[in-house]
Length: 443
Image (cartoon, rainbow, N blue to C red; front, side, top):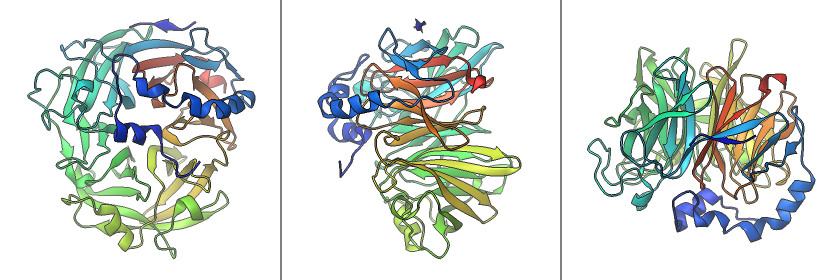
């Protein structure tokens, strides 16, 4: 049982909300329901053609929040608007997230982004008083920490970690803590920030300017080399990597952009099919922190490849081989998304397509992404109808794992606990953080 401890051109809900704003906060944004009538026909189609995976078909949640396969349950851990342990208010628009070992034995620490743009101060952690440690006072984005009991998933504490940033979207785990990415090029913004999961209070911001100034989406790190892979949420985005000169000094090095050999400015969203494997290399970017939003154009002038809205990233290994998984949210002939695979090798490597959506039944605009310890890729959707967490089996078969039964909000922040027993995910617009448990290992 659920428990509670606390058509073209296509535009995602996320970008629509940035452009138009939302009308309410406090558990549910009214904007979440503007898409209901537009999606009914698609919704009925998807309901009829449910695709069960290794855990079987989805079961209706009697509480109408999250549909899951038989044997899986969820716990409500946290909600928007609650008072945190440090006295600040839990900000709105939960997004990218990761789970670390907690401050005490038997606890975990979730570090969670808040994708609040400029001008939405009421959605932030402290709309009525300044935060001295804020990177840019008055900006409502940032990162919070939620400490949970590893056995019960009960919330032990919560606090602000990073404040005064803008549109903290995704990010990634690293040897240095949580990397929180600003999906914004507002003046003075557009950076990756490193956040310490042990902090029980907000700290001064630590931007990594060498990682570039652009509309960052996600980051992932090869812990053996210290190479950081970085995505960019633009219709004509690039895929970047940062190569440290010395892994012992991880934030000193060279920023580069991916190029397909012999095919300059390849549009992977239109010209890369699921049967293709192309060789890549990397072009250097000598001014990673420009005043203007020009990094992708400078990279493409050197032949860098184009991704259609690079979003989620995950790093894994197959034996000794590093692998980077990439969500291209608007990639593919139908602009409904691709899941790409990068096999880096020295200064080159190969790029291929794992999956491409041929219709909303396949999947609808993949976003946050994680590789499960059990061999499945999980990704959140940011599409028009009811959004799912989808899975991809090692065979390449796509399946349904979780469905937002409460609203049209996207699901965000999918990640696993250190012991792989628990998946965490949030309903962004509704402002609800969930922990999911069940027979993951069986599948």
